[in-house]
Length: 203
Image (cartoon, rainbow, N blue to C red):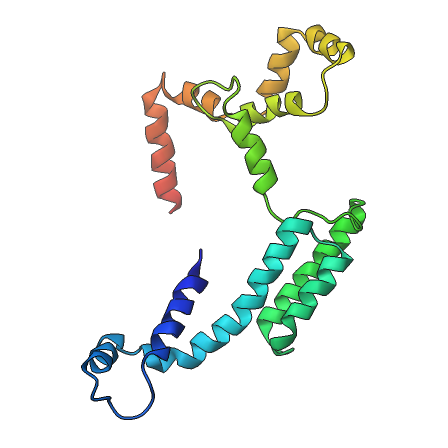
């Protein structure tokens, strides 16, 4: 959420307010008046940036190279300025170690396991523009994504042509679909009222 940018701004502003008595400089005096209680959080700001900076650098490494033993060690080195007792440090290292176990189980321990959804989001973004209809339903998009994978040859075309409409419908009917849900509710508006009433009852 880019909160660190706001905290960096707060640190920069505090640097323009020197310690000691109120300065005779009218600009500095006005600045102190507008800062309110911000100076009281100076230690919090310092600790926050101490913890956030190495985490942000680690994020850049993991997003670009994935998580493996090499990037794990690089990230641990970046954390050296954070106290070992810090819950931030402990939590991040614990998370990396758990994900390394997952990476090994998937056979990605050496290549580096992706730790963000940017790639899949880009793929779905591409899928939205290819024959999914007006409603951009995630399940309908997912059914078309395999068409973008690999190269098309005669065998794959033959397999696609052999799939009947009935077989395709059977596959689609097994999936949850926002489009199908809307079709059920629109012909019977009272169904929406029942759902709302049930929701209010649960709350």
